[in-house]
Amino acid sequence: MLLLSQLLVGFVILIHLYIVWLEMFAWTTRGPKTFRSLPAHLFEPTKVLAANQGLYNGFLAAGLIWSLLITDPGWHRNVAAFFLGCVAVAGIYGALTAGKRILLVQTVPALLALAAVLLAR
Image (cartoon, rainbow, N blue to C red; front, side, top):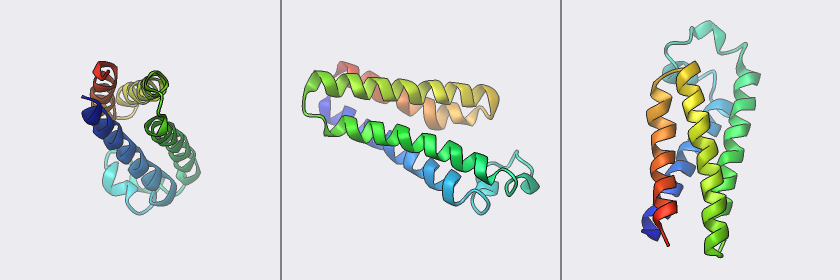
């Protein structure tokens, strides 16, 4: 179960590193293809806002990376649970305010990883 939890946390990390890249560096090129419900003319004016969001997603990824580097099982579990909880809450908020798809892309993987982390002993 420990290996599964680490793999799932790693998957959430990869999702957030992709989000960092998308929001900070590819907002005006890849963003319109990803967020089709947003009018194309809004990507350039919202570039700085998206980069700010990307930075926050980077902090979530950094926290999860940190959790994988912690050797103490209790601290590892607590730090991973905290950051996965943050990801899940952000995903729920995003699903309510931006698009339902965020629930599947962000919240579900975070909750699966959180369950695995809490069950791993």
